[in-house]
Amino acid sequence: MHVAVLGGETDFEGWRKAARALRLAGVPPERAAFRVGSGGDGLFDESLPPSSTDAAPFSVPKAFVDLAQDVLLHRSGDRFDLLYRLLWRLGSESELMKIVTDPEVADAFERAKNVSRASHKMKAFVRFRQVEDDTGEHWVAWFEPAHRVVEKTAPFFARRFTSMRWSILTPDGSAFWKGEALTFGPPATREMAPTEDEIEEVWKTYYASTFNPARLKTRTMQGEMPRRYWKNLPEAALIPELVAKSAVRTEAMVAAPAPEPNARLARTLSRMNRDQSFEEGFVPSTLGELDQAVQACRRCPLWRDATQGVCGEGPRRAKLMIVGEQPGDQEDLAGHPFVGPAGRVLDAALEEARIDREDVFVTNAVKHFKHEPRGKRRIHKTPAVSEVSACRWWLDAERRLVKPKVIVTLGGTAALGVLGRKVAVTKERGHGLDLADGAKAVLTVHPSYLLRIPDAAAKAAERDRFVADLERARALL
Image (cartoon, rainbow, N blue to C red; front, side):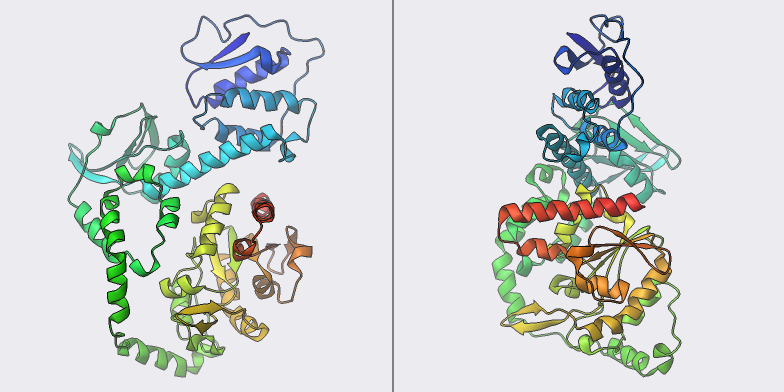
């Protein structure tokens, strides 16, 4: 048995060097093993046999390298061996990474997906607490990730909190940002992080005030916020009481009289609507200006029954834009795109396709919610062609301001808004279509379609196709 000794649990370069040496020496997977530790005098406990005379330098697909970097962060003990088995098989099966039904390939992708999910949860559930030291204000967080994703995820916090001096402590290692460079340190313990700060009570008050008992779905909440993270979340202490009182609060909300309309806002919208320059010659110069102007849009009748217009959100210069159909019930109330059930499906698919939603501009072809009342519910209705055409002015304005390189359209309505023609999504999906402004469009289904498929196997297959379409869009970037 030839044993490669690695410098750490996430030592990708060490694994790659050792695996390459083993492969060139012709050592089969059953005769190779990888261990983490100090090891003996050299790389291998047992000397390597001479390299085969037939051995030659080899290369592997970039997809394998990217996959291996994520799989190595998984906590499973056999991840090194799994990757070496795939590396060995690539010698005779060059298209192996495309065979997603292969058990070992599927296993590797599933572990990479779990790592990506752990990274996403770290972005969502890290909670900083303020401390003071010799150099001033410092923000410290304690977090216990499901997998070893500290180094993978820390750059996100460096981009998000550039002006803060912060530390993230975990059992696997620590990340530090002092305003200039990201550095990493040894594992930490919970006792090394503060347990509370002065701002915490303010955060709890805010969290409790935004908790909507009428829309509570406990199982869904626990799916998005797993209990394993609760012990390190200040607001988690409030959840049991908020859930217990949700029924009483819901009844009180239903019984409460409707608030008076905002007279000042109504006067402002009326004045904007009367201003003909808004319709003729108005060109928004910023996304904020566009968002404000949409609230006074009267290009079609949909504004009458909607709570508000919902524009897109995302980076000003996002390379990828995703266009849906229209705001749904939850989006109409919240004023943000893709925050309902379809949005959660999209988030999970983006994560699996290794696309950070923070880097994507997400919007809709139609900016107001079209629906019909059915009891206490508002049921979605597909916008008419005339309504999509009327709202295309706003979508074109967003495209002009953001200038995306790739646009993913979700469903036929979105494709109509982007392309200006009706399309058969099932026939044209997944291909990079050239647009007049130089961008490319990738057509796929809407996430809500996946929610409506009753058969589990069919739903899983369609979801895989949806993720594959997002991966094609990422490749075009």
